[in-house]
Amino acid sequence: MSNRNDGPEINANNLVQRRLKLRVRDAGIERLVADIEQLPGVVRVSWRADKALLHCGYDVTRCSLDAVEAAVQNRGAAFADSRWERIKRSYYRFVDQNMRDNAAHEPHCCNKVPRR
Image (cartoon, helix red, strand yellow):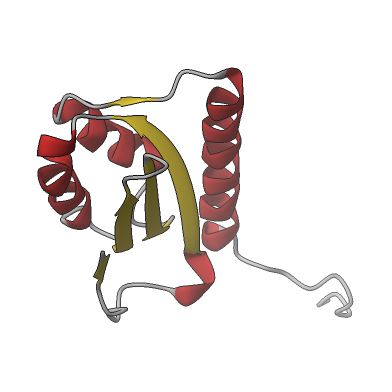
């Protein structure tokens, strides 16, 4: 398990934890975890061999689930192909995009008296 300290570029409000079920050979898992750790914005990565679960924490404004998936596929691993896992990854993508959009939003106040 790896745990990097939050740097000045990591915003704690944008951190998410993702649990992804993988089909992987045990020989390449250390390299896979190391590759994911090197992605910008990734804070925490761990592997649970008994359940084949990858736990990954990242800042959604600097990293995305697609980047994690690309790292997994580059190492020859694959995601579990059950219907639940596909729905869960789709939901993770939706939430990540929503958080990125909200982080870039400039708030405004509707209760101000308009200038004349």
